[in-house]
Image (cartoon, rainbow, N blue to C red; front, side, top):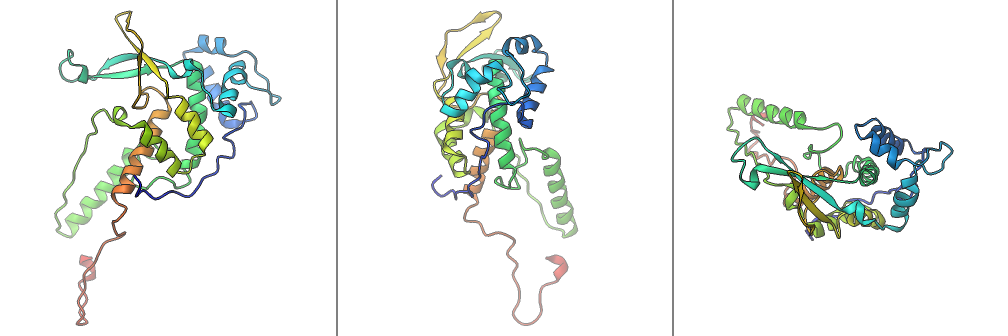
Length: 271
């Protein structure tokens, strides 16, 4: 990863800002959570709602704002209860055919969503390569299907063979190395305090597995990102984008076109 070129620094002007009702992006978090099925949890979390610039809810003043300013995260924000979902393929008795989902505290989800909103706003400044369409706003599989279709049509027009490779990443979120992820965040210009807050959500994490109303003993989770946390897809996208940029670091941009020096240029249509 040392060969990975550092991206231009991006300024998180609001990385240390308190969570208040004057923040439009934070109000979206509050409203979306308030209208969710977890309304009873929402009523429990909210202490007061003040439109005068005061902390929007009690948990923000006691936890979220403290985390933002000090970079310290309460243990409840880290811990998770893991449930498994059958992938609808293969033998149900095999663990590999089940997907683990981390159930998190409502307050932790709020804090993670606020961090995600501030991270997405700056990654949209062209920090990620154009080839990365997964887990990005205003992009998706449709863009990649369109690009593949264009390649197919051009190759058919030029009577050229087209070779495609489809790679299915097995347990993608479970293969993310956290130490590498923190370095990648620095390469993309994330402020140290912001990276530290994200790191604190993962360091010291413990989890329990529940099944059929039975809960296992707590165990430490020292790697991977939480599948079930809103930050996980974007963090994985950062890691995967860094791998792609590092892999093609020495590649020359564009297409090399051979030509003749006797004055007869190759047919431009074939180029």
